Length: 439
Image 1: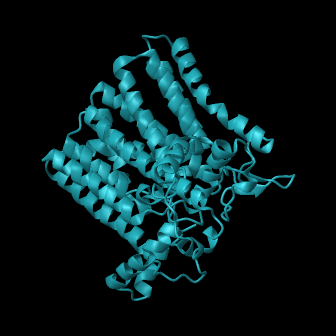
Image 2: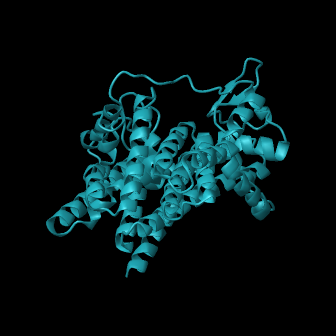
């Protein structure tokens, strides 16, 4: 029965991906430009790789288009872009279908074929990340029922089901951090030098995908420095650092060659104006828990880890909690934490595996406690997914003309506009094609 449940969970995820796939969006074209420039042009001049979508681009002092995106996601997408050209390169896409969308009017057929690889990549990395999360939970002593249920919750009750279906970096970041957590748990069994170097490499690639992930590497460094007695502290730190540097060096070299600076970044930065958890988790306007209340279970979950888990699972739980805390602090102080142009708190998408592992012990409880946890999970899952459906229906009309509900209170317009459930589903049906073409 457990195998059928697991199969049903992954089939539901695949079905959601197929129906609600957003394509490249704006960011995806920005990452694709790096792949095309390096792999097919053999340079880092992006002026001939910008196809009407300027997300992540800005003009340099000498008038060239340069990207603010780091190269990690392009590295991970490149094999899929090449594969897409090999598999689908002979397909001819009708020009009338392309030219009907003004953004893609002058985009060559082969570019559209290659760009399909980016879509394939973020779906692949999301699915593989969910499989690794499932296996990690099994290895940590949770049943296949609990592991399957938590994979379902991790996908449908978090920003993952929206932002893993776009060309943004969140799917890859999620996958890399699940893999890091998986390798960390595996290392506690073997204490091998190869695992240490690999953990460092994965930390480096995660940082090259999203620069703030570099903070997770320092959490890894601290944990393994104090835990490692077999290999030796100096050797373990050296192996971790070598693995990290073997990948992350690509970032400064990429920026120096491409733009002549270490990081032509966004104008936003850190603002130490309030407690970070109040910003990103509990803010009455944009708090993560207002969109995804199921993750409130991390608080009793961490307590249960410390009280009832075996030593290894307790260490992994403490590590996951520490990574989660670092991400909350970092993004909570980030001046764009409220992210006014997007659907929800997407910055914590990569933290989903840490949330899930920390809250997992709640589902081992017995009797009334388990019933309460289960009912709370079902209710909050339906609540969070309903907000998603309401958003993509685009039936809510806002005074300032916004496309999305920017704050949690904006969803109250549903009640002010006398919308029916039929109106919402009609809107979803109308906008599915728009969602796939969204740029």
